[in-house]
Amino acid sequence: MGELHGAVQRIAANVERVLVGKPDVVRLALVTLLAEGHLLVEDVPGVGKTSLAKALARSIDCTVSRVQFTPDLLPSDITGSSIYNRQENDFEFRPGPIFANIVVGDEINRASPKTQSALLECMEEHQVTVDAHTYPLGSPFMVIATQNPIEMEGTYALPEAQRDRFTARVSIGYPDPAAELAMVDEHAGHNPIDDLRPVSDAAQILRLIEAVRRVHLSPEVRRYAVELVSATRRLPELRLGASPRSTLHLVRAARAQAALAGRDFVVPDDIHAIAIPVLAHRLVLTAEAQAARRSPAELIRALLQRVPVPTAALDPSAAFVRSMNNNNAGTPR
Image (cartoon, rainbow, N blue to C red; front, top):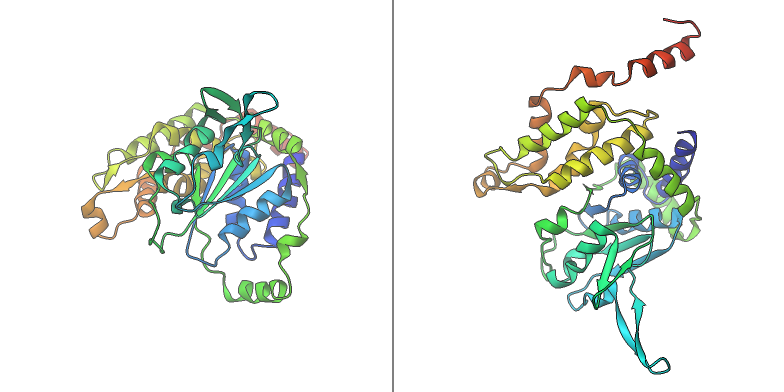
C-alpha cells in the first residue's frame, strides 16, 4: 500500500500539471488503470480529453501509441496485417498500434462500426486474431478513447457491446475560473505535455495491479454490488440495464478505489464513489424516459438511495479494524 500511494501521487501530480483543477477526473483515470480497465472520455471540444489521455500515457514509462479515428480507417490499421516477405517467401505479421501498453484512441466515434469492432477482442481478451493466428497483447494494457457527444456530423454512435467494454466513462467539464486562469498562465507559452517525464514504469504498474487484486471484498459487499446492478434491469425507464460484465467492472473498480483510499478492504462507500462512472454509460433509456429528460446518472443515484446498504459490510474485517485502532491509539481496546 505504501508503494501504491507513492506511485499514484506521483502520477496524479504529473497529470495535473496538464489537466489543471480536475483531481477527481485524474483519480478516476488511475482507478481504471489499476482495475485493469479501459476509459472512455466523453465531453465537448476543448476541455482536455486528449490531453488527459496523453498525459497519463506519458507519466508511465510504457509503450504508448495513438490512433486518430477517421471514417476511412480500416480494422487492419489498428490490429496490424500480414505482409508478404519476398526474402522469406512467406507472409509475416506486422503489428498495428494496438500492440502497446497504453493505446490512445482519439475521437473513436468517427470510425465506422466495422473499425470500432476491431477493438472488441483486444479490450476484453487482451489478444488479437489476424488470419487465424492469435497474438497476445502486452501487460498492462489500457485503451483510453475520447469522443465528442455534441458534434454528430460524420460520426457513428458506439454500439452497446463497445460501450460495455469500457470500465468507466468520465466527462471532464469546464474548469472553474481560478483553474482556467492558472491554465492560461501555465499553457500560454508552451505545451506542458512536452515537459512531462515518466514517473512510473510497467513493472511497478503490474505490482500495483496485483496489490489491488488482493484487496478484500466481503460477501456482503459482493451481494450489494450484484443487487445494485440487478436493480438496473428492473427499471421501467430502461430498455437495457447493466450487464454481468458491468458487475465485474464495478467490483474491480471498487477494489482500486479502496486501495487509493489507503484500505485493503472494500466498503459500500467505494461502490457509491464509482457507481455512476462505471454503470451510467451502459444503460439504454426508453423513448419515454428520454422525452421526460431522465438521465442514466439520475437513475443510478436513485438506486443508490433505494438499495439497502449492508451494515455488516461497514466492518468487513473486525480484527483488522481493531488492530488498526490499537496501533493508532497505542492501547488495546
